[in-house]
Image 1 (cartoon, rainbow, N blue to C red):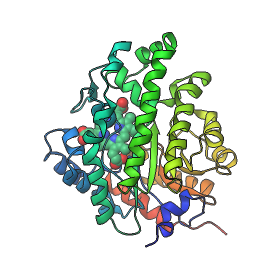
Image 2 (cartoon, helix red, strand yellow):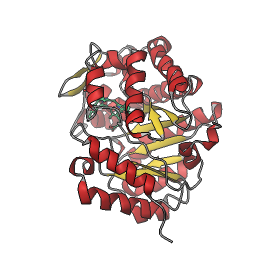
Image 3 (cartoon, protein in one colour):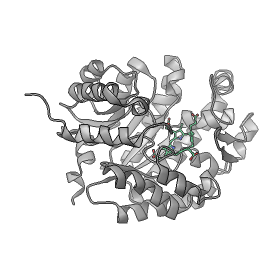
Length: 348
Ligand code: 1CP
């Protein structure tokens, strides 16, 4: 199948597809019993991400079950700090942990030269997936945006208020900029290498963009993401890039105008009519079902899915969630969602 006849690539190129293509953020994960089974075969979560045989199997699981239009390679955004030599581990039931960066000297320990070798298994995973995926399915590569990744590197894990990272940025912006610039460069190279290994579309996750006031948001999120998009596009102009600046509210419009992305992934709070009026005339949009509706199911889920399809289905659109699927999601509710999207036609 020619790449432009894949539904997801068509939608990302600005075409309206009826019904729209669908994939789900974190579509491989703990809500799937087969994931839990495969995950138990690795020593730990990072080991699973860096063992191509396991990462390929986990990536394919939601495709087999639901015939989704996009397969996102199984990995994590924190693979990048790991590949830079920072200590990263995942505690069951707690989440990611890192040995935190605390002062300017800690940045000197990061080793970009070691990255290519550390990331070689990711590229092997992508090559295998390109071989094994059904021809109509688009292979999606990804990375975290510099700010979101930096927040974990500085906080040492997830955070409620990002107090250490924000204070550092406000007190020593030149030092903080060194970290953001380093991450921008290595992330652009990483995404280019993913394309060279077979990724056909890319998503950049700025999951914690929404915690900044406007000026800082522009400096630490919008500008670095724009630089990454420009750098990847200079090497691979044909590969669509989706940006997910979660929680940025009306500044979604600045992202649509300024970063050069092909599509924006909308978080759950973005109003549908506003997105149609202010974003969909500039970029393709993706989103934005509340992931907790896949726990609740039933009429609440059905009505919300219908509202999204009716608001955004008449333009370039990819059905997705507004954030990652939760471990409590019901596999039956996901099946209901996919069936409803596949059956949708605009009212005439
Ligand atoms: O216990 C387990 O099995 C680990 C749970 C898990 C999984 C399934 C983690 C730890 N990461 C992942 C996979 C993952 N993470 C993917 C795989 C592909 C897919 O979507 O199917 C992707 C794209 C990510 C991206 C990711 N990791 C983001 C950005 C998207 C988002 O959800 O906002 C972030 C912030 C992370 C960090 C991370 N890794 C894992 C967890 C639980 C977290 C979030 C921690 C937090 O809330 O701060």
